[in-house]
Length: 246
Image 1 (cartoon, helix red, strand yellow):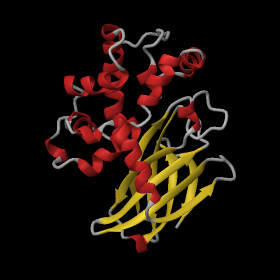
Image 2 (cartoon, one colour):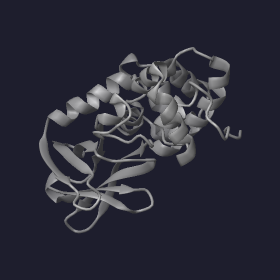
Image 3 (cartoon, one colour):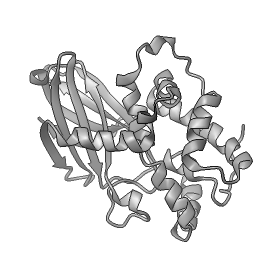
């Protein structure tokens, strides 16, 4: 299904939140957003979507058994977050958003997270959960001298490896990023991935409250804490945004 070349009023919130609009579309939507309380409220509702997708990696009981197809259950979960306004037109848009969400999160696990039916896995709950997880554990952070991206991690030793919570700010999109654990011997493991919308995260000049707040997300590495040398925040095309020595 081809996505419209121009945004339709009140219907581009989900696509903007996941960073699937191109630069021109995102700019037009941000102009609309500045004067639309309804879209701003819906965007706030969707602010926990990226942490929700990342959290699926830990919560899925049988990843191989989940089919990586954005079906009606995934769509209904997204529709529940953005409300019932202009449902028919928005349904077409959110099929695209659902597909993008599956790709950003790394496949079938995203479908599991959004269709599990657990009320405690709402975007709002999981965003708050990621923030709470960050408050515990051993912390290290940095502000990159080149990109100015502010990144910090909170680490907890687990029997299976190391739990990692990330706080990320002063980053502009649209981008797709990952957090990579780098071992003392040079081995690498991806901790989590997420999308940065055009409006960005943790920006003092952000267009909305949501853009001004940092991103909180979390995941895990199979490495023992003592084996980890650093973490790197990278774009999926390999550009490093920040390096955190631990």
